[in-house]
Image (tube, rainbow, N blue to C red; front, side, top):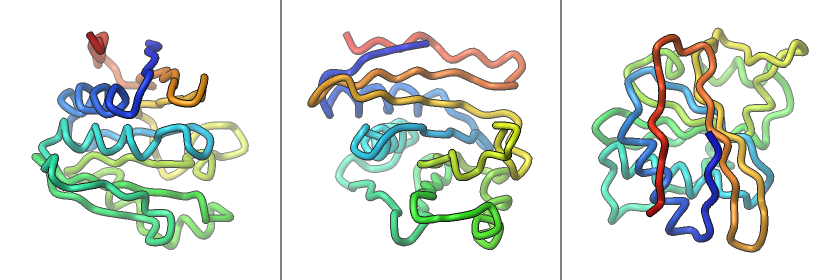
Length: 158
């Protein structure tokens, strides 16, 4: 599914709609350039999962993992500063990937094996590819991968 947003508010709304359909153990891989809206989308997803709208989600660029309390635990992972799979292995991500929460990974390219598939046993996942189309316009391509019988609804910003 592909959807365009034309403002930060629309990106938050898209994330919030998506968040309402997530389940324990879901892993979302967020692909996109710097400034594409990965953290803004994550904030909207957190709102959809019951995270207070009075709070603000920050990118864990330096802490690598931020945990937030919503209706489910929310794990926000940023691998931008990681250089190798070996470094990632020291973070203990397996525990959160297969736990009771929802995990969102920025810069998931760092998880990919030479075959192009993610490591750490991440088979079932939601991949979101974000393209910058203009100053405030973004295109989001959202697809489930190996999630049998799982169909996400068509999202609308109207």
